[in-house]
Image (cartoon, rainbow, N blue to C red; front, side, top):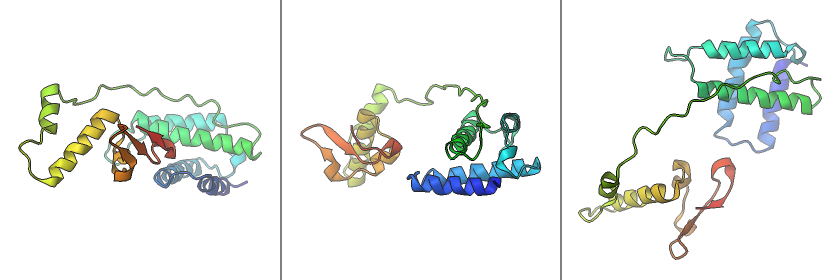
Length: 186
């Protein structure tokens, strides 16, 4: 089977299983970069995808330079390799190949950095103090900051909150389609 046809089918399958519309363009761009690289290697069929070829692509990612002239980050490498590993599992599940060409990929470790700026107690109090403020927008901003600080919600989760999702008496809020498109209480 042609590699581009297998990728097309995979993308259709991802849409069918409900892959987030926010994630889909990233997956498409990863495949665009990957297919350009394998095309340069003379690869057109999925049967030509081997563990050695995939390891060579991983090495290529390690030394790849982004648009800003800098090496791609570990996070970018992990995104690319994660997409390709899922594609490898898809090829096996659909019986398109006998062995998973991505099985030997070893994901690089992402270094955990400390947060850049955590406000100290005085700064947090100053940010949330509205006694001298009269503007409704500032009250909204304070409510957002308090929600972020108290619940640990993500920015996108806060943006999607509605007034009806917040129970002031019970002290919780209903987060709709949070991470992984799952609903949960915070």
